[in-house]
Image (cartoon, rainbow, N blue to C red; front, side, top):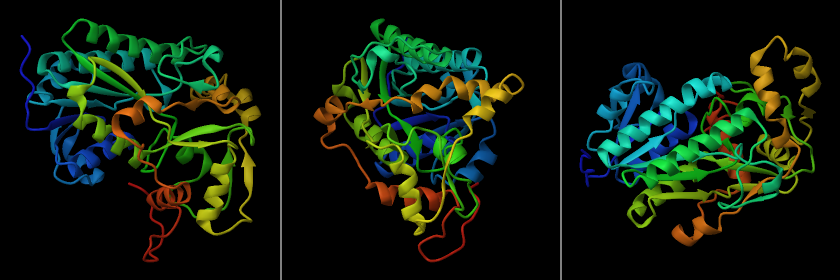
Length: 337
């Protein structure tokens, strides 16, 4: 039997120590939600995350019973768990989502899932709409498309309400899997160079995490007005010239002489037979060769103008959070937790 969802605005966040999960938890708290966070080691996570008055519960997203128990009384579940470093996607990502769906079915909560652009192939480029065909050319893209199909099928069963919010590459609060943090700059170190992985004049879509989290919180406030299954696109920062992000990093540092370097793709090809992570990264290289812009018209029809922090401000705040720039009071940059 389905438990009635609580009306006391309790949200369960799965993946609270990830970049987006933590930001969503923080933003929901600011919007008056109670937030429960699922983590295998809650005491350690609570001491590192700095999220405020969050109810931490012990559990593993790979265990259905743990997720169902954590979701008791929740009216919203944010599923932000991801396999680390692109590893074991099929064996980890699909079961974790299946467990979140089971928990949403039992609790009656709306399940919110952060989508990305891996799902799309050349027939959908360059402007991605919610109705664009999902015919990916990569293994990870196929898995992401399958995950969204799982959500849509669960919603069609009449017992689950699901929402996909799709966005471009993350930047903002520390996000371990983001290109901004892992490639373009070195967290905890002063800026000496910027590495850009894409073609300089090919457009690229970025999602500033505080803006994306604010969007999710606004959608959570009107979730009862949404259909059982909905997919919405977050426009974020669309940069017609991809290199603009690297130029914004130089402006934030106040030093136009900082070199912008090319990403060493040829070296990855040479090492890929011996380094599994490099093979996974190379599969996604096409996303830096073609422009993929997200159409957010449907989103803005629901919530009004999309939350949007000016690029230079967002980039500077991101670099401070990563420990690459000093804080506003002049304190030295610190390594992120």
